Structure formats: structure tokens, C-alpha cells
Length: 124
Image 1 (cartoon, rainbow, N blue to C red):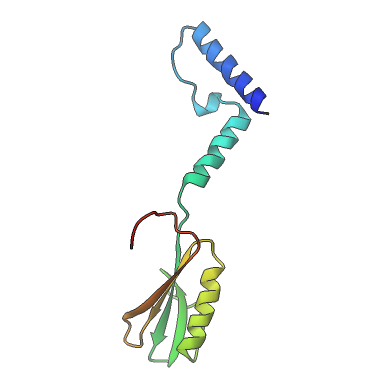
Image 2 (cartoon, rainbow, N blue to C red; image 1 turned 180 degrees about the vertical axis):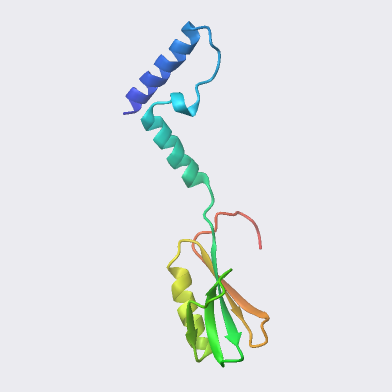
């Protein structure tokens, strides 16, 4: 397979040179196998999106909700904070890259849990 890719690339460059065209071949000119390989490499290099969940209080109903970052409706609701945190951790762990942010009864952030391999090599 590798030899075929090299041969096709060489033929493409040779054809461009023979025509006097000094342009670099575009993605459309690449053999299908090379395009697929380049696409896979780009996907692997692109950072994954972190999925963020929150455990938040609902003082009107006396419940604790597990919500996705920008969702208005809760994923699930519980009578105790401990139950909500346990469920939130399970949900967050089911994603390759996620975070669970647990809030206090007054709405302030209490703690955060991060799951998966963080693609960023930053401190903090």
C-alpha cells in the first residue's frame, strides 16, 4: 500500500513537471488512500471537545440536577447532592474528555472533576 502511494505521488509530480506546471498538487489530485490518511491524521491532531456537566441546586423543588453545560433541562434530578454527584461522575466518565463541575447550595462552584486525557499541555 505504501509503495503504491509513493508511486502514485511520483507519477503525479512527474506529470506536473512534464507539463511545465510547478504547482503543488491539491488534495483533489491525491490518491484516495492518501486523502483518507491525511483526513485521519487531521482528526487525530485536532483536539477533542470537552463535554462539561454541572451538578446544580434547585431550591424551589428541593432537588439537585445534573445538567449539560448549555442545556436548560436537567439530564437527571436527585433528592440529595451526593446522589447527583455520583450520577454526574458516571455520566462524565462515559465521555472521552469531560468535566463535572459541582456547585454549592448557594450556586458557587465547590469543586471540579476532569476525566479523560486533556489534549492541552498547559499548567493549571
